[in-house]
Image 1 (cartoon, one colour):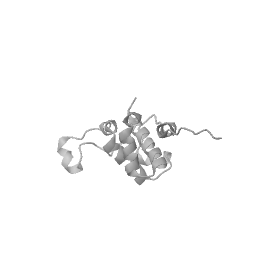
Image 2 (cartoon, helix red, strand yellow):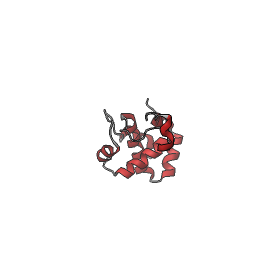
Image 3 (cartoon, helix red, strand yellow):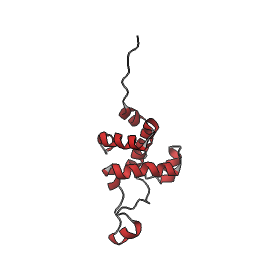
Image 4 (spheres, helix red, strand yellow):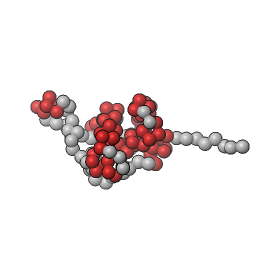
Length: 117
């Protein structure tokens, strides 16, 4: 007779998280996480739109550049340690869930996993 095991995706994701102690470019983060730059951009895009704290970590652009850059935040700066950590969490969610919609649903239902605390 076997005992069923409880599987916690949140626990698995947190165990595999990457912690940086300095800002990293998206290219450097791709090398550290052993993935491609387009994959990091994809994960960063999900985090940018689904996690408010992630978006707020980017510096705000001067108002006159908003139209030129088509956004109010400067997304070309290196990622902060918090942002690198969140991107690594999103990458791990993708590893387990395999679909963008499933990852977004997981983030929406578990926002406490992606906060600074």
